[in-house]
Length: 123
Ligand SMILES: [Zn+2]
Image (cartoon, rainbow, N blue to C red):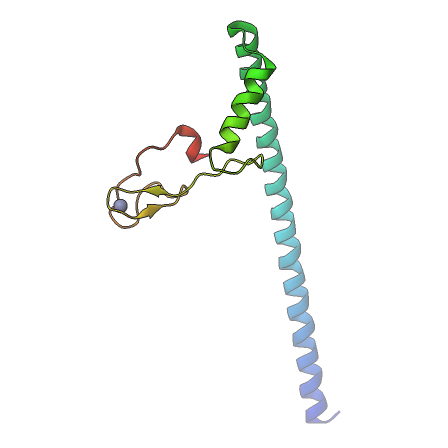
């Protein structure tokens, strides 16, 4: 085995080592993603159950009907101008004139919290 062969052998070994390391990192990221997905599914299930309980309390104690619920859902769905079954919140106007994303708790430019938000806008 000459020096060139030895060099190439070492290079191939380094590439295989790097592939194994990257494969391990990818497996780890997949496991993290699976755990996160399971956590999100669990949280959604709990939220659905809480909403169902709240709805049944309203129905059973305040005389609300399924039609009331569906009408209100359609109204909320249409607030963003698109009846697509999704709730989107448009960026808010800050008193300084900047637009503040719903994900931001304060304006990037002036540091003020945006006005006119509801508790549901933070979800
Ligand atoms: Zn501002």
